[in-house]
Image 1: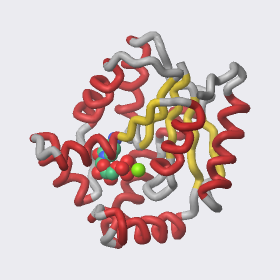
Image 2 (image 1 turned 120 degrees about the vertical axis):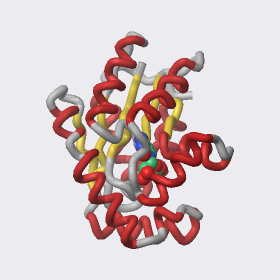
Image 3 (image 1 turned 180 degrees about the horizontal axis):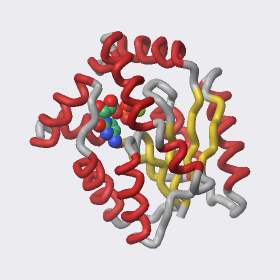
Length: 198
Ligand code: C5P
Ligand code: MG
């Protein structure tokens, strides 16, 4: 089973690239941000909590995110693997995720980290805010706060995965096509076994 963690700060292009990679390598794409936004759209209790936190650029509690992932992994399906986008977000989530995958006789294969300069992140998020309808992409203060929280709580995951030999930095500046190519090259280099591409 191929379990790719697509990592990077807000605006790095995780969602865009995850969709393209899922298609190319026949992986199931799991975006915790999308799952939370769906809860908001469905007006569930979790959605109400998530809306409050997301609008402020804060994180949803680790146990909530973990149980969301757990229920997604329980769904029986035929796939060569998964691509996790926007998860794990904290070291606590990564530790719980490792435990969960071990229970499923699986593990994280690789962590692909999109490396993008801060000004480019801010510019991309502002641009996305004009069309995405996401209020967390509109306010400069919220964008800055999300990047700060990434640096404080999420970036330590680089050391976590590096110590397991799973950290792959990927140049994330340039066009969408160029970045996809960087990712594909890295996945193919890392993955010595053939990947069934449908
Ligand atoms: O991953 P994405 O950028 O779509 O996430 C949007 C927001 O959802 C985050 O800024 C955060 O508020 C929330 N989120 C979270 N925990 C996750 C994923 C997303 O709290 N694992
Ligand atoms: Mg995203």
